[in-house]
Length: 45
View 1 (cartoon, rainbow, N blue to C red):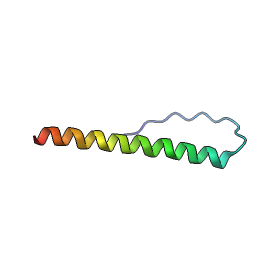
View 2: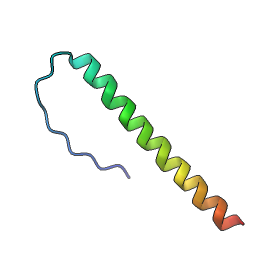
View 3: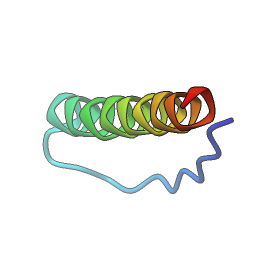
């Protein structure tokens, strides 16, 4: 589950801001998947 709080603020380049947020979200998802993989591997061993 991903919980997010969004606060809107004016931004001079909104498209760039969307790209930045997308990268942050993707990195967090990848991090969570890696943690799940690690915990699964530890349970198997």
